[in-house]
Length: 88
Image (cartoon, rainbow, N blue to C red; front, side):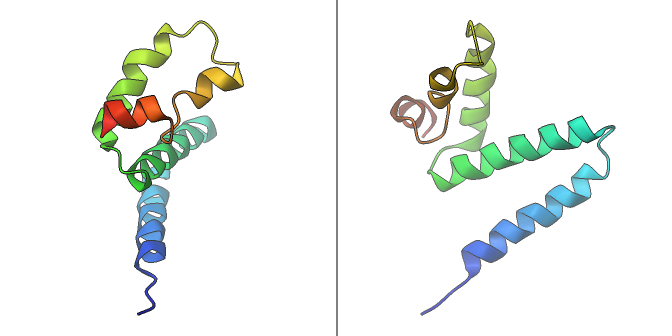
């Protein structure tokens, strides 16, 4: 059976996001909101608990020396094995 439920759910998130972006105080604020929503949706797709994932990011990222290094940031993406272990 063909289904487009995943696509419809993704669109619902975008529509809800669009409504929220109306209340952003600036373009940068709207951009930040979009990045956070994107990370949360990606985390969900990888089977992570979104709240645990966000908490993990907020607890660990401030302790990093340099967020400009690609390998540092990659260690915090939802498909990283350590992230999966910590945020299931």
